Structures are given as C-alpha cells and as structure tokens.
Length: 563
Image 1 (cartoon, rainbow, N blue to C red):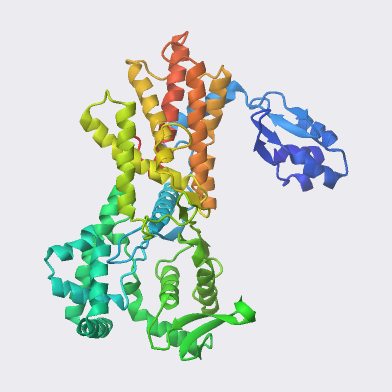
Image 2 (cartoon, one colour):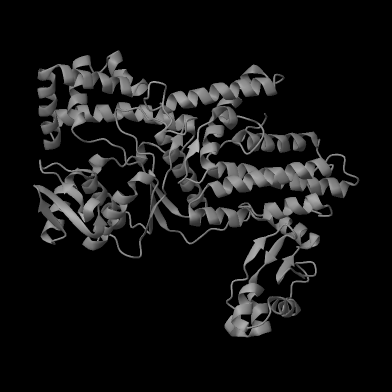
C-alpha cells in the first residue's frame, strides 16, 4: 500500500503506516486515510477515495470500499486465498520465516538444589520453554541457562546431614523424591544440636576453600537434585537438561575479581563494611539511596555479585545479542540495578538487548498466592500429579470406548497440556487463578479443547478412506474465514518472538480451532458434492491439523492422536 500512497500523494508520504487491522466488516481495515488527512489538510473520506483510485490490488482483493469517516475495507479474493493456502501447504515451515540468527541466552526455571520445586517455578519454566522453542524455530541460536541455586551457607548443613544419614541411605534418596523433607531434617538437626551446627559452619568454610572431599559431597548433593529436577522436566515436557545447568557455583572464581574491579574503578564503595554500588536514580524511603550490595560486611557474596558475573559471562563468553531473564516480576528493581551497574562497568554494551520477561503470580480461589491448606507453598509435583488424575477422569467420562492402555497414555498429555496452556494463555506478567477443574475441560479456551480439535481433524482424515487432499478451492464463507486464519500463522509466530508473549499464540490457536469448527459444521467434507470439493476441504483439514500441531508444539504441548 506504500506505493499507492506515494502515487496518490507524493513520495514523501509513501512511508506512512497503512494501519491495517482485522475488521468485523471485511477481512481487514486500513485506517491510513485518518492519519494522512491531518498531514494533507484534507477530509479523510476524500483522502481515502483518492487512495482507492491508486491501489493496484485487483488480483488480491475485491473492490475496496470506503466506509465511515474514511476507513478502507479490504476483502481478499477467494481465488487469491486458495492460491495462498496452496503455497502454505507446500511450505514445510507453514509460513514461518527463518530470521537472521541471534545468540540468545534465556535464563529460566532456576530451582534450588535440595529444595522441592513449587508452583512459583511453574510459570518461569513453562513460559521460558515456550520462548526458547519459538526463538529456535525462528532460526536463533538459543542458549538455555538454568541458573540453579547450588551454592551458599545451607550447603554445609546439607552435607553434614547427608554424611550423618549415609550417602546410600533411604534418607539420602529423599533428595530425589522429597527434597523438602531432606532439607527440613537437616534444618531441624542444625537448630537442635549445637555440635551439628558447628560442624555445618566448619563445612561451609571447607566448601568455600575448595576442600576436595567436601566438594565431592557437594557434587553428590547436586547430582541427586538433578534427578529430581529431571523428573519434573520430563513430566512437564520441557527442553531443559543437565547440560543447561548454569548454577551460581559456576561463577565462584570470578566474584572476588568483580568486586576488585568495581572498587578500583570507583563504581563500588564501602558502606557500613559492605561493598556497594550506588546508582543515580535509585532511592528508597525518605530519598535514601538504594545500594546494590556486591560484598557483604562479613566478606560473603550475594545475588548481586553472582548476577553481575552472569551477565558479564553471557556477553563476553557467550557473545549474546539478546538476553532474556524469565523470572518473577518482583525482581525487576534488582535486575535493572544489575544491568545499569554492568553498563557502567563496560560489561554490557548498548547493542546487547536485555529483557526481563516478568512472571506474575499464580493465585488460589481466595486470590492470594496459591498454597496448601497449611499455608505452605504448593509442591509442583503434587500439582502435576493432581492434573493428570483429573484429566484421566475427564478422558474416562468422554471416551469410555477407548482401550484402558490408550486412556492411560492420553491422560498425562491432557493433564500436563491443560496446566501449561492455562499458564501460557495468560499474559506472562499477569496474575491468574489456578482452577484445575476449568483447565481440564474439553470446551472453552483450554489446552484439552485444542488437543481435541487436532484429534478431531485426524479422525476426519482417517475416515477419508484413501481420498487424497487436492488443490484448494474457496467458495464458502466458512472456507474463506478458515483460510484467512491459516495464513496468519507465520506472522503470529514472528510476533511472539518479538514481543515474547506466548499468550498471543494461544489466542491464535483458539481462534483457528473455532474457525475450523464453524467450517466443519457448515461445509461437508467427506460428503462434499464433488470430488474436487472434497479434495479441497481435506486439504484445508490437513493444513489446519499441521498448524495446530506445530503451534501446540511451540508451546510445548503434545497433540494426542486420539481423544
């Protein structure tokens, strides 16, 4: 449309945004005449009429109509849509382009060693996984960074407890099956037994000094926790593994040097015995400056130090172009202080983009943080097990005709898919109420509804009994609407990569599933009047299935063959 604007009003206007949006009155609506009218000093309808005279869209659109104060209503020709869907079918990437690759470290999940993952870990893990899948599909070099908490003073206590119970004991196996129980037992021993507490403190000193035997026990703790993490990741179907671990301990050797460099450059100064960075613009109550503490008064290091080492590593060693931190919204101030300090130190150049993908809270029915009845954080494994159980009940009720082993296979796919979709369908920085009964429903904007939609299309294609999809013909309004939705997939995936908002993909897939449902209700597929019409509608079914499966896959959600 830019060329037409230039022909109508001069080249100086050719770069005007055509402001094309979906419309309830046509396929699209262009609002550019409204903005150009002010620049040209002419009535918007006159501008719109002049622009229509210079459009060259006869092979793409029906005659363009001007409506209201100057809107251009664009309806794509059925023949053009049919050809475009044919091209989409021939494209193994379904219209998703390969972008110029960037190196993109993505920091997400980040549980703590020897502690159970709870519901707060769900969103960072699920959103992070959807983003890395999408960015990789767009052609980027994504580096998963699972910044686990694997260092610090509690490890002295944990190592001593491991030695007390025995490294091969059932109690030690709690690190794999019930990490919180192991941690609680160690903490109880620390609180009640002064001798144990003294041994724990001494063990921390040996750990920080690099004592070989202590490091061996520490590694054993980490290895047992890895088994627990991997159980969760396998159940969730996320793409994190041992090779993606980038724990706090990885940066131990760099922390002293970071402090020395910041102090020598004058960026950090000692305040009340602690080494701090005071940045302009960061003030708290009564206008007092808020410090980023990089070395405590006792000589220990905190999150600020580790996070500075982390971002320096990602820029200097990983050569990042764009860095994503998929972590809680409450960490916003801390992250911006770390980034500003890194910029001041020269570790974060202006051409490297850093983004906080803010993660909102998961709430209970009382709209408070989701917890157990006792007030403890809800364990993630218990939540996921409950989801699978609820999903099994739904599958048993909906499809009692399916074999028992098939229903047992489908239930985890439906239950986990339900939880993941419910999380992803909400803007990542928003809160949402966790309602498992609604999540596993086969109707409405849910994961199981989309999985069922895909399974339904598969069933139609199985019933075709050898009939092959053929060239696409668009003759009915429902076919037109479905084809239009299919063509939007590529641009939608690009927008998710740019905005880092997976809920946009959820909304698209739900709209597509509804468009297919309307198509199937009004356009007979297997009973079509002609062989050409049946072949065309089978092609629309097949393309819809491909897009649904691909889109769900980018969200990390499986598509059962039968439901």
